[in-house]
Length: 278
Image 1 (spheres, rainbow, N blue to C red):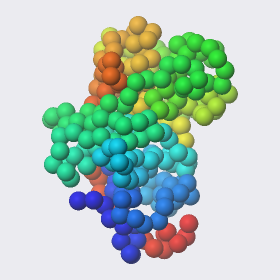
Image 2: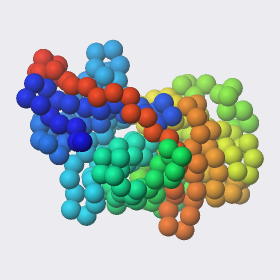
Image 3: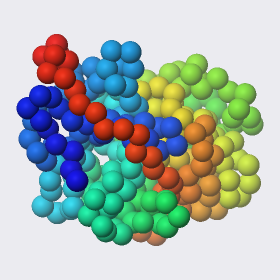
């Protein structure tokens, strides 16, 4: 059953993927437009609902559903892997389907039931050219002119991946904002601090652009494996251990596939008073 906008308020759903949490609004039934101001108000964990990202579902002629993503600061995001996976699971369950297509700014993405309660999503091919990520100046993307020798990857949003000796010891809350607004990234960037555990396993700490520290991120995990594989540090298929759990990432010829769990937390309704206060 779809989430519905009621006369008395605006319905929403709360889901998370490994602790990376989302508010999901179904815009297919009408209701007020979701603006940056509404996103910021909802994202306030004290006065709103609280989330890492907000996702809005709409109809699309070329895919089963279309998705629009907002960060907690109200800015738009072209990609959100965990939210895409969560919505894919919700929609497949509602339709009794084992596969689904979802349109994002990245294009039409494929999702499928991976069995065992897991959902798999093709996040598309990584963007590796400087002007696609984008960077502010031309140059190689596998070794950036930044202290720490990071690597840049585009997964619909920019990523700056650092390889570190001990991810657990790193203060990601202090480290991330140092690079989110680096001038080499004109659209700001997500930041990952990644420790190589083996040829098929990584440990990643995550700072998300426009949100901050998160327990997990699908696109960041994809970027971590792409970056590690480009450096020859891992295979193209590896498990990424984030603060909230583990995602399985497989960089195939047709794109980067992400597999992981989803959790439906609750369904709620924004009151008219809350909406009127915005």
